[in-house]
View 1 (cartoon, rainbow, N blue to C red):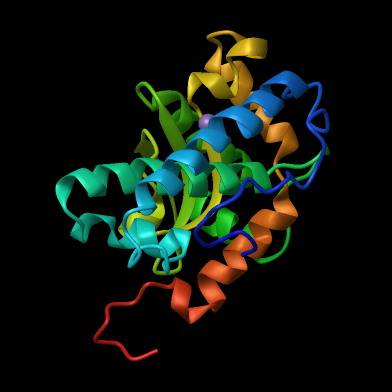
View 2: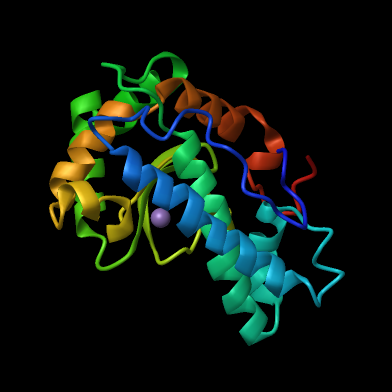
Length: 221
Ligand code: MN3
């Protein structure tokens, strides 16, 4: 991924700040990308500044090795590398509003796992509503099988060797300006701007790229 190395830089979004209107407003997108994500990038670079051996790692490698770092560094890397990875993943998973629904292999997998698109939508909505405080809801694969999970703060599924397909940021800064405290309304609006083509690409990478299956090390790949 471009920009996936120290010193990290804030990459432009693949769409304009107002592209997700009226579902997600331009001001929210601008602050979210230009201030919130930028802060995680600055903090991550600050954390890595004095650790040259960690500067060689990609974002995903940093997140996956966090639990083996000294306690203080572990928290700083988990929060800030997670904050960069999760935000980029969330932003890249949206596009200009469409009446899109999953297609292709992801659509089939959703049907098998959740009965139907509506079944998936209801389960995902419920999970996103149930996040207490700040965090994310995710559609991930675990060894190729779809699961809905939630993570607190900026914890990332990548740390748990899960492969992300789709994510919603449910920190209040993601919706408060437009939706106030109505998270359910925000979740419904977010469903209108999901980039299902990107989700399909993610799903294929999760299930076809053996390095993303996170098989136990004893299995040669
Ligand atoms: Mn956020």
